[in-house]
Amino acid sequence: MAFMVKHVVGGQLKNLTGGLTEEKSEGDKSDAAAKGMTQEEFEEYQQQLEEEKQERDTNFAQKKAERATIRTHFRDKYRLPKNELDETQIQAARDDVELPTELAKMIAEDNQEEEQKQSVLGQLTNIQNVDMGHLKGKAQATLEDLKNSAEKCCVM
Image 1 (cartoon, rainbow, N blue to C red):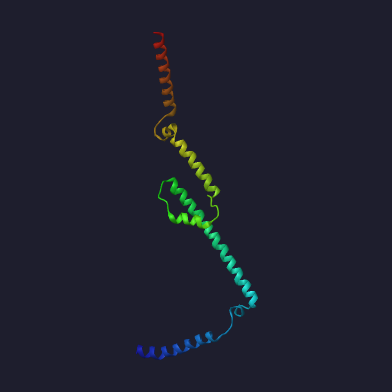
Image 2 (image 1 turned 90 degrees about the vertical axis):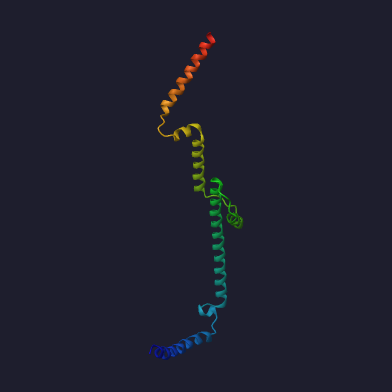
């Protein structure tokens, strides 16, 4: 029964859709006429679209190069292996790509913090439960003891 219905209705649907596709192929309208423009206006419009596309592509390439620069910076900072794709994206941008100013400020602050942490006092502050005043007092007391013992040795 389902076969009969499909056979009867299916043939009619094929005829119906076939008629619609023939109507579209018969139309000889150009793209310009279809959009309600003259040929010159249409060419101008196509040129404008092409220029906008090129501008978007260059902006996109610039953004990709900036992101690649950021990734390269972090790879250098954390001593990770370099990526050839990032280098090619930077070269493809052709412009001098620099880190964004906000990121450059953050990096400078991080570098200052790292320098402080690498100093001796910076390392001592990282150690928990250390009383810096007590430690400083002991160091001064030891220094005074050394001076006193050096004076006694010179007197003898």
